Amino acid sequence: MNKSEFTSALATATGITNTKSAEMVAAIFDPETGIIATTLATGEEVKLTGFGNFTPKARAERAAFNPKTKEKITVPGSTAAKFAAGKNLKERLNR
Image 1: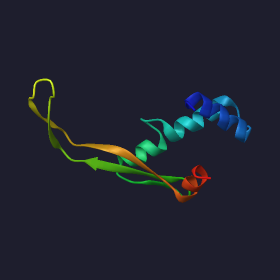
Image 2: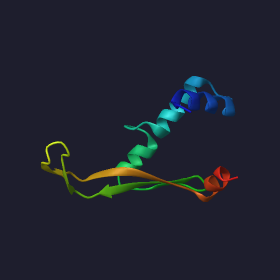
Image 3: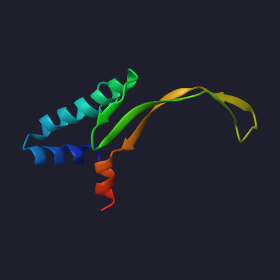
Image 4: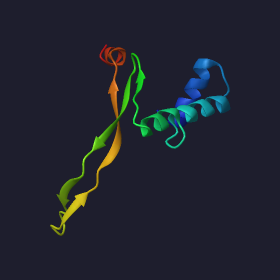
């Protein structure tokens, strides 16, 4: 399911317009201004009981090498979003 299909499904499930549904999806999932992204950017978790948790995960700087030239390089540290499925979601998927 892509974003437009998700938006249409939300509109159908809630009885709202596709435009309003698209605004709601953007308010939650937009990578720049969405609720999840802005919360993770502050270092906080987003916990949706039963569905799952979004957590910011720090990755340390590490040494690596270019396989073509064998040159040693340093990969800078970064932060990534981690998702862990909740109990109810896991149960639903394994029925």
